[in-house]
Image (cartoon, rainbow, N blue to C red; front, side, top):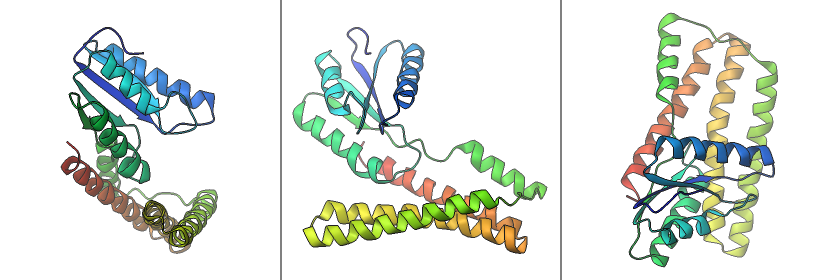
Length: 220
């Protein structure tokens, strides 16, 4: 997808999906970004389940003459992929291409609009409605995340696999964040504590800001 020879490159990294529609959306985003940045070679790669893999795409940008490439993970928060897989991609590319400046871009993070909307909702006293379906779905998600974290931890200890044990901790954090929102939804539905739902949102915002700060201080 990268155009002609240019010194600047941008690699958009998607998670990957078995759905062809998901890959098509990523490619559409890359085309839009490429049109907005005509002097930058924009390409897209994936971490799993979808071709092309991000590593060879980055190699292609280097072969095309890029001297500087920014690797941008198109994920919301700094969970496992943004904390381990994409930084590993950057470090491996630096080792393969010593003359190429490869920079790690932070995840998308919490939208400023979300922060503003939450503050406006609190100031205006707007009360969120309860959602039994949302509570059920999120409850199932929390159970699945904690179960997966426990299974990863057990397997990691049995195999003495540090990477898998680290992934277990990341999955546990994801489950805890989901549980925070679940508690807010339940308190709102059961006791009418409408502010608990919004408080859960602020916890997610705080975590996102922390992760963004860590990413900015990390690989640059």
